[in-house]
Amino acid sequence: LLFSEARKLSGRANKTQRRDSYQKQVGILLPKVEKDPQKIREEGDKEIRLLISLIKYADRPMNEDIDVAGFIFSELQSENYEFENAFAGKMILEAADHYKIMGQLNKKFFVQHPETAKLVADELAKEYVLSPLWKEQHDISVQTEEDNFKAEIGANLNYLKLFKVDEVLKKNEVQIKEAETEEDALKAQQVHAKLLQLRSQIAHYLGNIVLK
Image 1 (tube, rainbow, N blue to C red):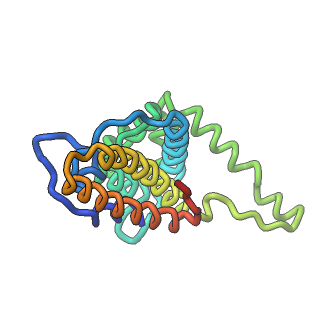
Image 2 (cartoon, rainbow, N blue to C red):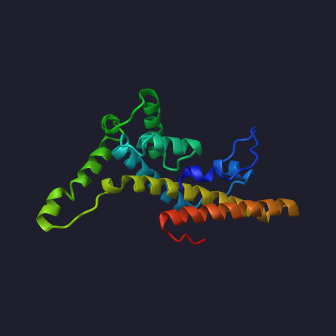
Image 3 (tube, rainbow, N blue to C red):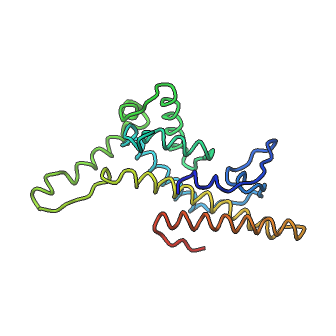
């Protein structure tokens, strides 16, 4: 249930107007609404976590067909994802350009980049906090992030997807209230039902109960 799941929602898209990706899927142009500052901060935090995952695991195989970098870039590109955190957005887009030109991406790109060098150093330092010596000295098995990097990446992408679905749900609620005809109201309600179903699927994947 990654970004590709959302593409199952279909609808006509007005090619002369720019639309949010989820609005394209449900075939309706929704009004602009003010974003919740807390939601923006939370989404930005998840974008930073996705950037860190990219730094750590870019050249690891995500599956037999694609590496982590290619997977993340394809998922974000397929949804025309717009970043809330300017730094995360800038670095991920620069990394994507490098990947497109060079055909690969690894930690070296971020180590040599002046804007991510410190972040890389900080993350590497964290990896040594729970070193193999901990297990040897205390006989305690510690499961590291590296053991679960695929799940970590999947969760980060789905959290971002959840934020975007919530944003479109909020816009659609306004659409329902402002509907001028019964037909418009019914269409907006059908869209709302599809979005709620998608939201539920994402929440189930994440193992959370997301309340309205």
